[in-house]
Length: 130
Image 1: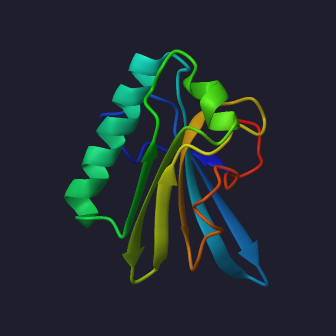
Image 2 (image 1 turned 90 degrees about the horizontal axis):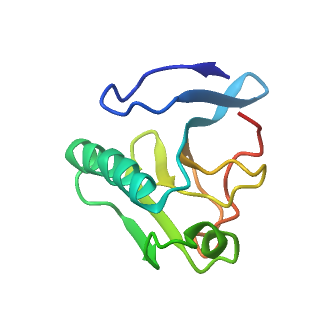
């Protein structure tokens, strides 16, 4: 894992991680820790999403459940709040969203892989402490 600055207009820390098996890249991740304040979290997520919509166009999947309210993190953990957007690309499926904070750290995560686990659950993020 290493720090990178893929999105210069997003001030948050940005980290890239790669999962490999038998010398082949299985998944590429970009992790962007976000503030738990609902207004700041929403603005950061929307800024990134707008940038990706400009690059990739209409997504093949877009799930938005609940709003960024005062208790949005609790709703995320109970699977009531959800943000998952996917684009099908030549390199695989790019998923962007806010997975359940398994390590207590709330973050936006981007994953590029051949296929993803079901989008019915928020339990899809990389298990790693930033």
